[in-house]
Image (tube, rainbow, N blue to C red; front, top):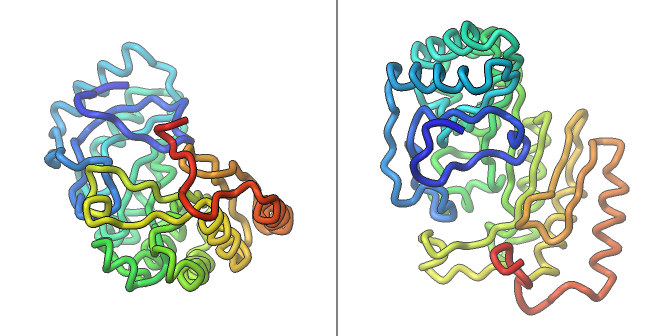
Length: 289
């Protein structure tokens, strides 16, 4: 791990990757539910520093095959900067197979189709994008930068260029009253996007977020599982790996669509009927485990 100062975040799937920080924070950082980069001013370190970090990383892991570039939304960098960094990584790491990054929808849409294809040629592989919810009203309420339609377009364009989309949704973001409605809307957006990877996380509010300070009420354990079940029921996916194994999730789930859909629904139905889920509170939260 290189270029570390404040807390460094990476997707669970990148646990075994070489992680190199080329920027601090998130250029948008306006989502009311996200506390990852609150208090961190966004700053790209520049190509010279990035080169130094690449060289330092190469000395320790010259045979690295997988690299994750941090921080949030590295796709926000202009195409020429991304191209220069990827060319450098390809030159330095002879066994490099893939480079992955966080990417907001607007940052993907700012690239042309030719630019996306060029980045793919340089081994940019997986773009981790937060969809959060499929309903436009909820996205506006939590200050998400893009609309659902823009997120669909971003996902489709990236995948048409050969990039792999890993899309994340937040269970519970719409609150209790709109839970079922927004589960259906989220499934609809995912169906239009057809991501290769889909992750579901439960919303756990943290004190450094506006959502927490505004008194947002988290879903109960039972309601969160019911919402997840409703979303999975609505998914019609052709070739997607699904995971809900983050520490925020009440029960770990993993499967492939379409073949494992009924099994996943069965697992959730069994849990909903077990009587073990708290119907009055969110239950035990990750930091109390």
